[in-house]
Length: 103
Image 1: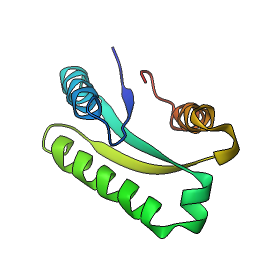
Image 2 (image 1 turned 90 degrees about the vertical axis):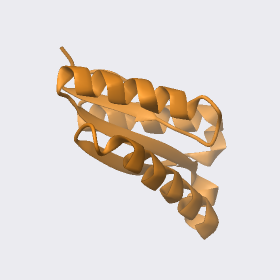
Image 3 (image 1 turned 135 degrees about the vertical axis):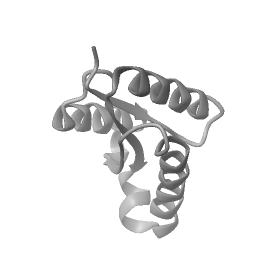
Image 4 (image 1 turned 180 degrees about the vertical axis):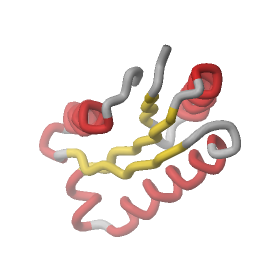
């Protein structure tokens, strides 16, 4: 049984599906849900719009999930020099910090 579930979302077509599945699993297990979105370091520190877009995405996702389970949302900073690997590392590090049973 899962107690803490984390789902990473982006501005792609599969994110709403992943969110819906994570909400379903969280609701079924009575688990807490953490929704994360990673922003590249350059966009995070130098471009306010990158953070704003990420926060808007998290706000939307939280609105979709809040009615059915306990939800936390986090905007993560990914090291830009590592590209997609930086995003994966940011999500994996936050998963460990938060103590998610399922990612």
